[in-house]
Amino acid sequence: MPNLQGKVALVTGASTGMGRAITVAMAAEGATLGLVARNADRLEEAAAQARTDGAVLAFPGDVADNDLVKRVVLEMVEQFGRIDILVNSAGTNSFHRNLADLSIEDWNRVMSTNLTGAFLFTRHVLPHMRKAGKGLIINISSGAGLQPSAPAGAAYSASKHALHSLTGSINAEERRHGIRASVIAPGETDTPNLDLRPRPPSREDLAKMLRPEDIANAVIYVATQPDSVAVELLVINPTVRRNYQSDYERYVAEGHTRVALD
Image (cartoon, rainbow, N blue to C red; front, side, top):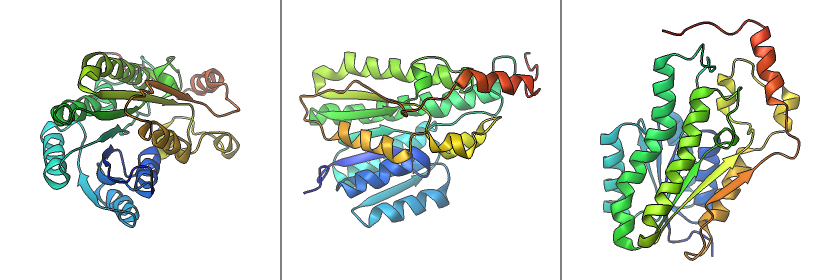
């Protein structure tokens, strides 16, 4: 029997990259799924792929939209009776990333997607998980959530550090209700988000990175642990790690920076 047979899971950022790989892996393990992402067409493609293995609901929209989040959670509970697992995988970044370049608009957008969305979904699933007396929340972070990364940028690094703190707060406050939270921190991973970098990695560099399926496998590992086990932090890195700082120094030397402080 698949390891997640009978489980109901909600995955954000499900249309591409890690989120899509997580969706496919959880469907293959028998989970009933609710999927959220901004791009409706790509989300439907992911949902169609997952539906070959079980029931799937797709909700196009912005994870930072509180009304959408509330509706998604209520529809999932009405349709399936509960939400056993929440995977906060939605994430984004900006082109201009260092403090002197980063606009206020980009800061707010990155924080809204990477952090506020995770908070909103957590906030709305908690009453249902409390009622059930158990639940699992998995937050997808980054190596930039463990140590600020110049190529990842100030906003992205700050949002991922905050996601670690949010995970710790969930465990501190909700473990007495049987609710567990885990943060998974992958190193460099070959996903479409890399296209947002001022200096995209070469093919040779991409070949050394993690694959989205590696993170999906980690999610399945965490999600299939018994209720008595809390995997609070899981760090995954490629075997060969690149020199991030040299990337940033080349980016500055090539004149990509701009002064945008106001």
